Image (cartoon, rainbow over all chains, first blue to last red; front, top):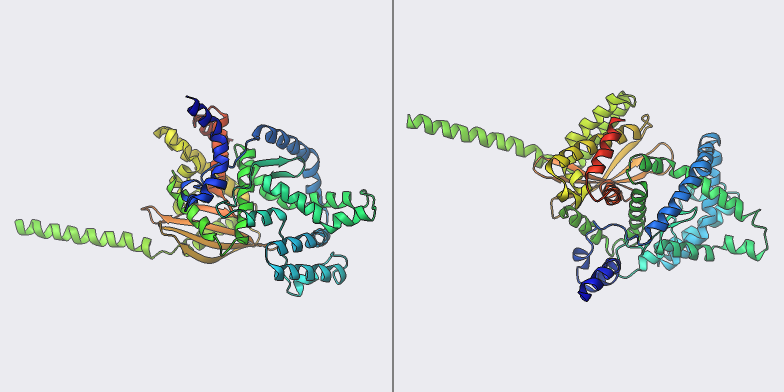
Length: 270
Length: 201
């Protein structure tokens, strides 16, 4: 009796720990614990849905219309330059993360890109580095954490799912990553150190980031919203899968096999 | 008479064998990459030829029916709820999901924008699954990474899933549908009703 009560109470907790602990200790744990068919762990779904609803309202009345105007009204080259500028500001964070991901040569390329674009590319407005053959890479601390997570932890498991105000879909792993990225970003530290009023730097950067990002995700998000019966759940799944894909690419060569095995499992689960 | 009967049996066997060989050969000879390429070409032709609307939707639906394993995908998308559904509910669900998917695809591309699909490597899996990598190049912007799951479940090679930048169509539907079912009393009926209502709209 007591055992069964405690069993049901711990059922939810257990599910979360399955990938993290059980699968890690079992050989071939992913076959027995995580079949890939499990839902995203979302213990705080009610507050998440609440924040999601607020985000959606703000998006509907302000962000999306602004992004539509930006997409359709601003000339393509100007949009490209804005994107280049924002990308360039993000390069140092990417470089730092690439060092921590154990890829110093890629980090060096990223830093070279940053130096070239900041100078020849007029403060990052033009992506000269790509023309010179230095390919852009983008990564973040969420991916770094995901990469170094314990062997049995599938990239799909980023801790509990979390909807951040204004920012949107996230999880424990990626939200932590976001804070780390913010803390190590020279272009967040410098303005504070130099006492630059946020209205001249942080606010415009944030606004541009939001509008640029929203205009780029418009097609995919509209599609997902229109073709889903539960948009929240569909986005939760899509976000988790997309992040897992990025992390899996980082782990490539070490355990890409597990992803293919996962798919075999999915094919077997009815 | 017995000789004739015997000859007829032999003839029958021979014809049967030939028919079997014919029906087996294309399936084993067809290769997954070719299936993806021809599907992509068919879709591009449809988008070029017909404007968005019922005609295009019907054409897309035919492509889905011939190149995709829709019953299998539907079953996957329902997950554990498939077992709870009655035979009639399954049939209705598959029909509603099929037209929903056809509509989504026909509306997804307004006009043909010069996209091209480049097929990459094909990875065969032990359980008869093929993973086909591909890239959708657009006229502007980054190419999109598409991965296809192809398998043969007795009806020749069929597509069973599409992954766009790592996001599986079937898995996303599965979460979507499951969440809807959970929040509507745990039965499949409300989901089917919703999908049917959307198809009628």
